[in-house]
Length: 274
Image (tube, rainbow, N blue to C red; front, side):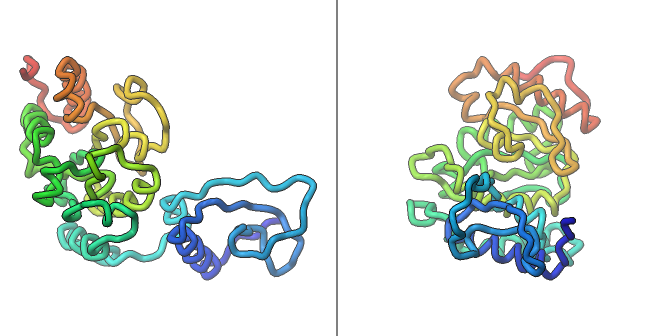
């Protein structure tokens, strides 16, 4: 019978997983063993090659965030009750991040997040653009101005919500963030969410939706539904940058925002904004 891991073993295993993740190793496998001291969970990267077996174990992927969930270690912000101070501690822990190649690909600065640390509503986009990289604040360019108008149409202002991105450095040429960049950076976003504890999260665009929900689907399937994200309600709508390219989708976005407003108890205007 499989025995549960002791807390000490879980912590040691978590550190080992994080160590191999930093080396770029993400694939591990489980196999049963009769060795009385080895337990039942084996990580391929930790052991010498085994003799060939008739049926090799099926590999599984263990993302960074899954390891953190399973083997959580105390974070600097854990003992802090003030969310503003807790967010500062996360920012300090992030430092001048060099955890992924983006720090060598032209980024000027890290774009952490901005807004009310006790916000009920949190918007999460994809990645900083040129204006954001220059100013160090998310959504300050043309897409940011449109997001401000969206927030205003909901009867709120920018200072009442919290705004962040999946990754905190601008990809070169504003390209779509790569999977390893999202996996490396998103744990800091998860810590921000845990501190803020918003009532509702709005994922802006497909990259944010796919990363947060771990589901690969088109926007047409994401939209119009509520999702449970670690106990928080999450809705998906179009990214403001997409709306600048295709203004016809603004009406659809307004439908998504109305759904959010109802959940937050905000008054929905009789007439849709222009």
